[in-house]
Amino acid sequence: DAGVIQSPRHEVTEMGQEVTLRCKPISGHNSLFWYRQTMMRGLELLIYFNNNVPIDDSGMPEDRFSAKMPNASFSTLKIQPSEPRDSAVYFCASSLRGTSGNTIYFGEGSWLTVV
Amino acid sequence: AQKITQTQPGMFVQEKEAVTLDCTYDTSDPSYGLFWYKQPSSGEMIFLIYQGSYDQQNATEGRYSLNFQKARKSANLVISASQLGDSAMYFCAMSHNSGGSNYKLTFGKGTLLTVNP
Image (tube, rainbow over the protein chains, first blue to last red):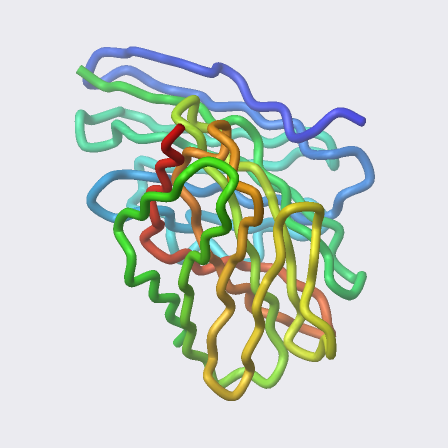
């Protein structure tokens, strides 16, 4: 079975440019998460969707960040305009909420460098 | 608020020996889940093992076992017969839980495990 698929794996962009990260969750999963990992802050939740609806976006840093989930098999995280402090690894994760003991699976991450 | 504490920034173990990675947690929720993830140098987050707060038995997955002590609020990961490929960062995480279903993870800072030949 295919896991959580993220693209791009690596991106280097210039400050001020728009960045779009993409995620395909595991088929059949109804919950999707975007996490960010940095050396300073560790792993932190940015936003959580359930059944394509954003439930908790309290971790989104500021208005430059936006996330969408137009359907059950696709989500995007957009940064516009990007800044050097946005450099991090961005993980997408998915799960089947509604089942007891549901496991949360992560993608391989998107490594973003803003110069 | 939930909190996960991993007190060992780094651990060393000889190949083929067992190692225990510590994790303590704090929560006021009666229902929660505990996860361990492995992050090798390549960067991906690999799910290892899960323990629900109401599970009576400790979880096991191959060479991985979770030593769950609810009263002490600890969820230590035990890796038996260490292999060189086990060298990685290991994260303990706790989920918020609603209706028995996990939906949001709080992570510890991780333990870097090095397996020596």
